[in-house]
Image (cartoon, rainbow over all chains, first blue to last red; front, top):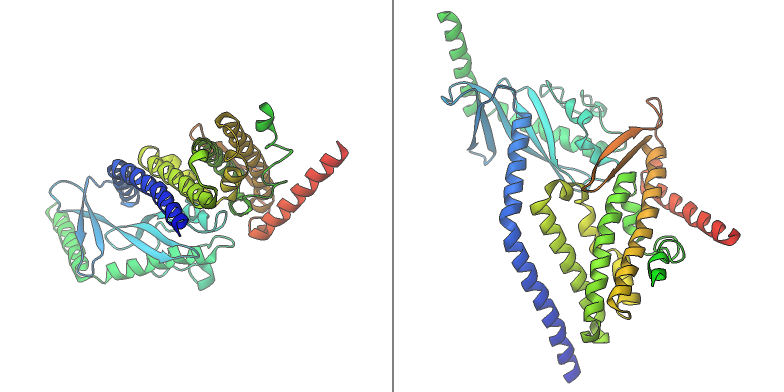
Length: 199
Length: 204
């Protein structure tokens, strides 16, 4: 009995030292890691938004979706595109994809930000040939070819391909039915036509 | 002393002879570069944990040595992971899946138990380096074979130093043998490698 307590205390001492050490390293590296994640997210947003966007700001929609709206200049009159994160359930992970849209809800570009799918199969969802297929697609095309759409699935990784494609399609559908956004698109068109008439 | 280093490469190769750490071996060798990446991460963690365990070996009661070794290894791997994520994000992305896998790689615990807990610091460091190198060499060749047959490509590079590049070995018309990338292909390749090693040793 005495021996068990002694061993228990020794193990506790080792675990305690390890815990303190880890806590210290965690607090030291946390701000750095957060900063890296933020930079990475911003870079992904810039990559998927259409060209010509000078400034973008984040909005939270009523359903909790964080939507990034890109404007052509500081005046924030001219909406050039949207970006938002799509999450789909893949084979072995939640696949997170940053989706960029033009104002008429066509896909501008996508970027798979996080996945931990099968190495050599589902991990190809981050290859550029797969992601490039999404550019210019409307929601009707956004199905993998096996399901009757226009996205060529990765060989041997249909589940991962579906996770990306379906999550993107659902997000496009959700955003294109959002009253706030459709209103904004209308205003953008009005501004555009009034610009034309003044010319 | 130099024997402690060289034994891990062929005579006591962790994969081909000791058959330790097979789970990450089968899981990551889908490309040659993944094999190198995992190997380098293992060399680093194995050497460091061997050194630390050799240093504390006299204060560890033998009855609870396994949980203490695991604590040391897990602590060390977590520190490496956090520091990499904060300071070298690109490397952290490349090695991302491999690093947490190292904790459960039984080579690390195996060497702590079989060698570092009974030997001095220098010998333990050399043992870790040698075992890690032997591990890396096998992973690299398995990755090469599986990638060329399974995807028709070859991805080469070295963590930190050289960014990975993919070469198209088999050309465009090659229809890849997917089996080689899936776990069965890993087992088949591993079995053939073990057989070749035995043939070589017998004839030498």
